[in-house]
Amino acid sequence: IQGITKPTVHNLAWCGGILGLIYKETHGTLKVFLENVICYAVTYTKYTKRKTVTAMDVVYVLKCQGHTHYSFSG
Picture 1 (tube, rainbow, N blue to C red):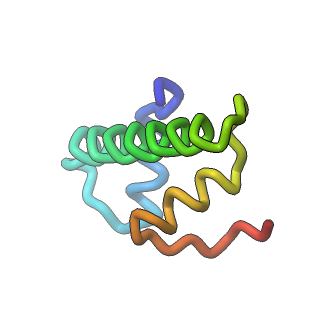
Picture 2: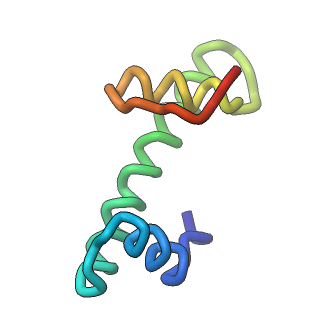
């Protein structure tokens, strides 16, 4: 989460057509979203008695939270 730099948020915002004035809000929202996904993915991994979070764990969490994810085939 600390690796989400201002240029990264700027590029995402620019691609999404977001104005430059809301970078800080976008960064905060992205941080909260990622914290939730990571927390649930770690909880799911512990529930399945594993020690490593896989990409499929994250896909499962996103699906359970109602987010559509198109670019992962696994």
